[in-house]
Length: 490
Ligand SMILES: [Zn+2]
Image 1 (cartoon, rainbow, N blue to C red):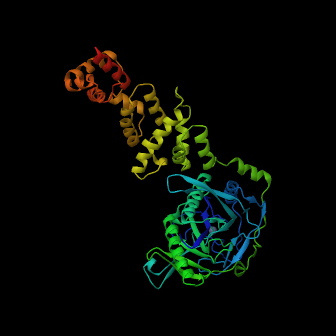
Image 2 (cartoon, rainbow, N blue to C red):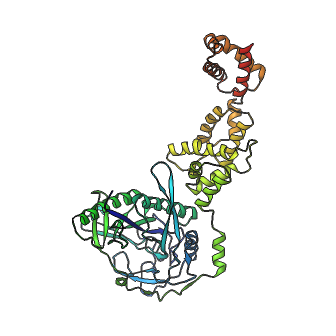
Image 3 (tube, rainbow, N blue to C red):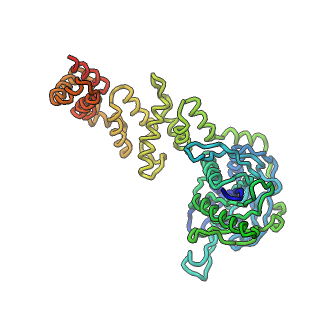
């Protein structure tokens, strides 16, 4: 065990799913030809005036409601002053003194390493609204070591910054936090969370302290993390680096580090600014944002069921295992598919929820994952899946044949019924017809018959298999069992 306790906090930037930017009417698009989604406001022309995007407030409110944060129904925007080439105004509109949300929490599932997990609550410091900056590209990445290019399409895209407390104590907890937060933002439909496009960005701050010490060590921020793997790898590298410094009696310097994927190391970027370096002051071009109770209630009413509540309900009310509930609620699309397939479906033995769960978790998701696609792209609609399961229940097809039919449905999107009719796959339940086939199989397998009569139960399976083969899997298995037993005891 290491001599030091790990302390991790996270700052997360999520670009919101609005049509237009935070303070102007330019489109909010992740991909567009450079500098095409721009106007005087988001290019920071002197004299241009910002107008706040109401949809962005709706989405931000939805998020702080989900976090159970304290909501400042009167909040203000401030200018965070700093110069950067991709920030033409030389300030970013943000919130500090009165952010939209203060406090709140996210519950995460921390794996125990044995397949189980423990719930841990990670506190939030605040959640605030701001605007994104432009994007700079330098040197080799644009094929010219002496040049830099700037694209202002991203300038002014609505951002929500979610700042956690330093509550995480391992890389695994940081990972669980990212997973839970991403899942929540996707459920809320406030961000598409495409990390590869920079729509969701994580920054970690890390410090070490001797076990038992209450005071935090000096924290270092790590930036340039464009995947969960980058966060994981950079934290491990930073833990090693700080451990080495502390072990040799050195002092960790408060600074911002950049993760360098190629070398697998963190590199110093700049010494960390203090809040007062930014000379925050209220943005004089924007009035305070007042959210009345009607607005808040309208947003509250639009909230979907959140993943944890859904998971709990699937276990308690539908009787699913925690594993199944976890798979089915892992994304909102999967959960909605499952619920749509289950709607109106009943089973006399009460196993409806379980039956549909098996088909979605194993058959459907198995095929979707093998194709590396998503459930939203699946050609089989929830009602079609339900119809297939109902055909099994009614004894029209066997479970084995159903899987073959499902293959065809998955590639063509056709209905189960039409495939069954076209291919003549209806289950054989005609006693006379099946009796004849049983006789034939018994006659052709004297050895198995002798073994079975001699007490070898296993041989019975071979005879059932023989009938199934003769009928190309269409025979009703229960009836075959019954008829074979009858024929063999005669
Ligand atoms: Zn604009």
